[in-house]
Image 1 (tube, rainbow, N blue to C red):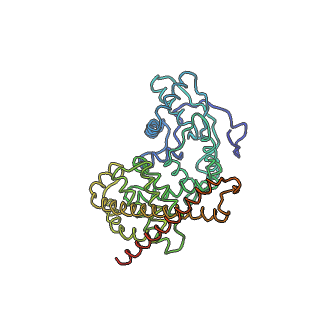
Image 2: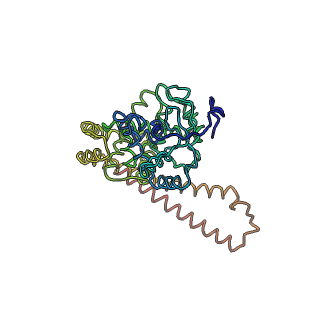
Image 3: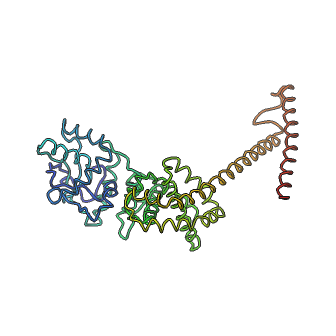
Length: 415
């Protein structure tokens, strides 16, 4: 066992050969839960004896996730047998070993041979809360390094954190999840916040709140992650702050929909949303102005999208095309604010550079005209004359620049 689990003794650690038809995929697993979330009314977790539709559907998800790794596992098992045993519950739910189980199902189907899944049978049930905690702890521990562990897709991880730590009866706290998954607590919180706003976004567009594939396929998860950080940083719990937070949330959704519409994804989209957070949301005056300028457009877009039946990415793309004028108007406003903010950022950077130079000359003056540990005995007469020349030039340039800035201020006041 990778961790010590209460209620598990050496007597329960026998590895059994289990016929495949008695097993089924764990619908509580983060990756699987995300994939089947849209089909929960149609799919009921069941083994192949009771209803093969469920296992067949999940097997397709696993193949789509990483077919190369699956084929590698299948080839290894066919040649040498199952080298790493899995973990299952006493009702046949697989806690660990989804890829191995999938490979074995494929081998059985292609060869017609009887094959078995080798696994420890744990005496636990998801029907009991205390045992759900033990199961989740074991699942997180197993993700840390067995059989070419593939990192969670960030959407799957966010959904897993949300489902495990939220609701009226959470399985564990965020602090427990962080400890058991070897994540930092603040990172768990960021993923949780991102999941919250991802679900609110799906509601905003009129899609089912668990239609996570829309976010996956649109490749916009990182935008919700950045959005969560920004909103957490800039807004408090007072009623007034919460009002402005909700307004800003809707503005974020409008910007994200614009980016989806024009195909801005990946690092470029993340950079844009960070600039928006840093230069607009972080500045309360800029943020209020931006919210006021697009709030009606964003509301109109949300109403239009909710009148459509959006369940897939293609549904969303078609709806955005139908609302092209509204989306482009949001985009034009966003681009204008973004450019103004970038210009302002450039000016601020320019001023910071001048300020740093002034500080350097101030430090030079405080140190009797020398830098660091230098002494005048180390400077030749020729070098002193060179320094003297540069200081004269600096003095003259400072006077000329002072006059230029003065003239600009006068012209600006006249206008």
